Length: 360
Image (cartoon, rainbow, N blue to C red):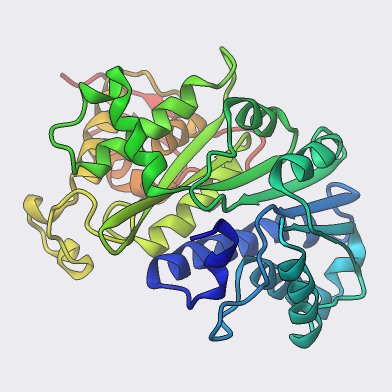
């Protein structure tokens, strides 16, 4: 199958999950830069490097039209006039680019307050053409790279993305790409059996973390998607705590058990309603591991404010809200005192955690 034939067929449930996550994140991302009367930045650039024709054969909306649908909500409220918004939609197929333009018009998404950049370009050329925009510190950027199983996100491309100021990205990993992580010696040691995709995706994330410049604070998170017998993945990246916070909120909407897959990735056989039961075996292992680590760090006096707590949340891939039970417990025990229930990612000055005594 040619890479560009993918969108011509009806989207399967895994593809719809991926598209929903992208659209939900775009919905969360846009208000950060468009909701204020005076926008934080004068320019906003949105990129879809594998846009396709915009719909599948049954008329389901693809990523570019979902993105434009969210922008239309802001146009209806006058929000798009608050900044210069440019949408870059690329595909190497001229036929699909032409079809995309038709679909944009047919669905009433040729929004007058937007600047459109819709061109038939292969990824390598399109990315090179956009590097100057990505480097612009006066522009906010959101990048979606649905690379259809081809390894376009090379280490060089990845480093360009993470070094781009005010730039969040989501890129897609095919099952074949993930499977090749089996052959990396350091990853082989972590994999108990060949079908353990959970460890492969975590290891893939560790690999991309290893590409980050030394000492750089950057947030990455995965989401796995099951399509038939294959597992695919999304990698999300942001330099800002608010970016990773919004992605994790979206991810946990899609997966109430672990926040990182559209299937039982940890093989725990727990249904969302069962987590309300007061049994430890009904608590997902990911949340239990986070609780233990957070409690240990708080008892040891190693976390001094709410930003420190959020850092632990983000490292474990859980929401800020997951920290509340542990902090409430230790406050009742007199181990800590604090003036907040849930860490607030939007505060410029973090609220402190006061340590009265250290636990065992």
